[in-house]
Amino acid sequence: MLRRTLLALAVAAGTLVASAGAALAQHVPFTTAAFEAAQAAGRPILVDVYAPWCPTCRAQEPVIERLTAQPAYDDLVVFRVDFDGQKDALRRFGAQRQSTLIAFRGREETGRNVGVTAYFEIERLLQTTAAR
Image (tube, rainbow, N blue to C red; front, side, top):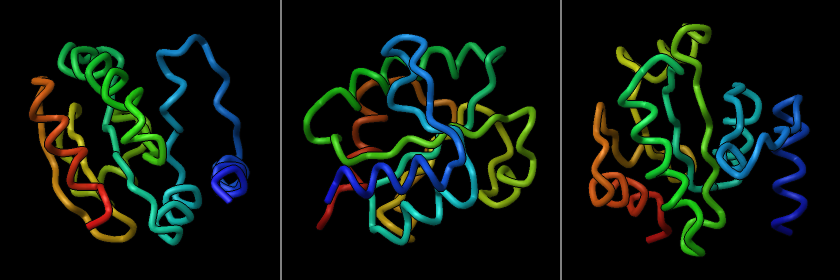
């Protein structure tokens, strides 16, 4: 079942994420179709508003990677929104700055952080995506 859900998300995204190493294996480029499919499936979701030139984004990246490597987050989908190129997505989420992290459980937004790099704070945000 999980395999079919993941495949459906990859197809909906219209792209398979090529692994340039394990660093980005957890991130899926944001598309409306893939995001809505994950929401409809009730998946835990993290939206990562990212800019490659942003030092805070780069500091968040290894923390997110370390957390998502834990078995507790095996079902989590991390969508990366390109701050410079996906202005429609920024408006959709009300994200005004890069380094914004937004957590969802299905269709419900469960929390957000802006500019946070501390492991325990990002972990607390991800914990809000867990089934209750």
